Length: 78
Image (tube, rainbow, N blue to C red; front, side):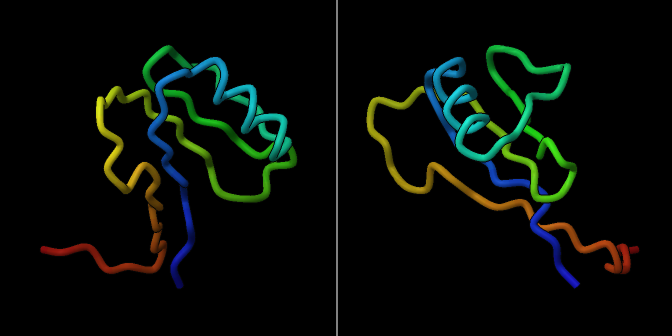
């Protein structure tokens, strides 16, 4: 079974985007948030993490968003 562990969004304005996504999804930032990377967690503990990754680009080529898929039952490679 696969689980969406985190949705990663590349952004330029950390404060603005953290405020927007927190309010829109009822999420809260982790205690170790900083100006370059912030992870937002569901307030009720249920749902994927939202990772905001500060990244400047003069030209915005897709994708600015990607999913991190967790597979808890995956057998590690040797």
